[in-house]
Image (cartoon, rainbow, N blue to C red; front, side, top):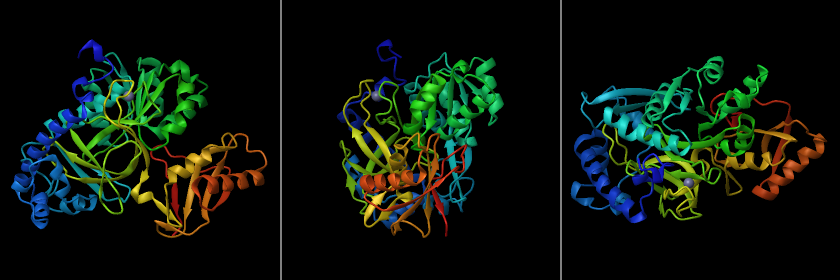
Length: 439
Ligand SMILES: [Zn+2]
């Protein structure tokens, strides 16, 4: 690691120019395509169905000829050929780990990894985001598991940076103890856990600043933006968030310390190729400043279960494609919401996160927590949209507050809402749920 680029884990990859990136990805994509063509039963079937032969794909531009891969296809494929499924491309001997990660629908997805996948895909990407968030070889990181898969791969990534990993399990007393007695100075946990931890620390009558937390790395739930100032101030720490998809790489995007709050960098140069599409027409959208669309991922050197054109269902806006003040060249994004969470109100697409952002502007009259009450399956919703809003520390006149929130939603998001103010909404230790289905 050269001293000049001390703020990057892999400066060679993280500062590639557009042309260099294209050339690297083209070579890797073509070998990955050939590997899948020869080894993956699922992709052999998909390519045959799409009428695609090995000789049809000769450049990275040909990627648009390939069919998309959807999550349900992996779930169908894993009914055969255990322990991974028909999408396994490596030999059984090469397979090093198989995780089962339960999704929101309750049906688990199996994630198979070879040693190389663990070290050169998952851990490499995690090491880049940890480094971007301030983790260094002398850091001591408390790693809170959200699932065995995330806990294990983050441990590998943290250790790859040279830092010390302190596993605590999901036990808040042990987490606090690691900071008090073991010299821990960094934290990897979900956004929801940050505020849960803060609450527990305060309950014990401790000063959060005295815990010595310097750097916090979190998974993107869209809440980091809102919570960051309060969490940074309370703990006296820096906070960055990252985002990815376990099936392809836990981390694909992450903020840098220098420009945090201004979007997550694309960090997986040479590991995962990223495209953007219109989620409705499925047409490709160029990655340019201001463009919005759904992210689509293609593995570039995975072995166990490489995926091609995997639909993430994550909708984002490209904030910048310029070189950042941190020196990284990876474009920066902000998350708009999930394609699956998108609501269509009178023909306009609205994401729950956008509603929460607007309501949060009324702090401290509101707490910032909301719950959208859906009476019918989405996406089409007839106004008024029913929203529960949690009261804050100083709500003031409640009738006037309710009206003001309804007005601000109508002005900013152009739809009619019916707001119900409530004293308390459910608290989540993991992922916050913004939508409640009443059907
Ligand atoms: Zn940056």
